[in-house]
Length: 334
Image 1 (cartoon, rainbow, N blue to C red):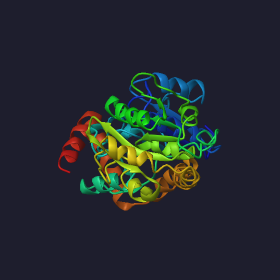
Image 2: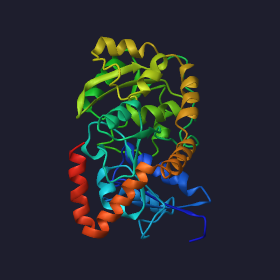
Image 3: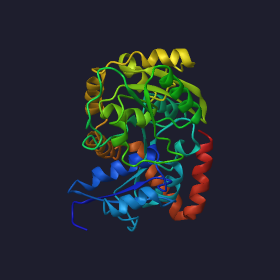
Image 4: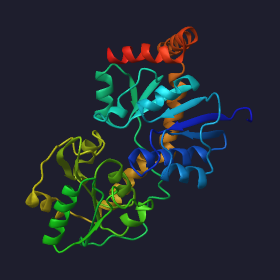
């Protein structure tokens, strides 16, 4: 390994199928790989569709080193598995899923929204907000949208939401497209987005649509919270972003009539505005710069260094398994 090269490991619990954190992991690795002063590898418990792309397309290896300068971990199970191999930043993507809960074994934490930041602070974990980055060279406008709404794409995760959207499309005589990840996962989703004038979805799906200069309706029904949304977000994007465009800021419960009203707010010029926002806020290059800067700054923290020294001492004395038990109890006290 050449002197001065930073060795970075990117970890995600599963890379066997498509999903928000899986796509983010690929994008993060892709950007890190493009930098001459970084050597990157990946880790996952479950290999498959996405890890195959990481290895075959990005030419990035599975974890092989005994030490890393920095570990970017997306889930607490990854932190538990890797904490002793280097400096760990855990990125927390949500407030409900168990895997997204902060681990005391991480050296510091990143939140992807104000909502997540508040959740981590309430549990006693300091953190920094860094939005999930997107490859803006990949997610862009290939096909201009129509001045009048003609085609709507659902990127929702529930058939209930898909049925509601299709019903509104039928009522308004609009073409309906669907990319339901639990049936037919689509890797080149940017191509599908470009076939629509407007996109309905949450979180990263909304960000990717904005990057493609598509107006967005934030709405879905997820298994971990009831069906709701923020609606057509052009004039309330800043507030929706506080909760990662999850629909949990306004928590509006839509019926057929009210969802139809959101569709009728469509304005083709809003796509240009949303692309501009995506270029400023969701650029993966900017996100990686923020991670690297946060790493350098947090390494100088006396509190974090004391914690690292404590972890190292505990592990040296009682071993990895007992260290896990000690920190698990500390986590439970949070």
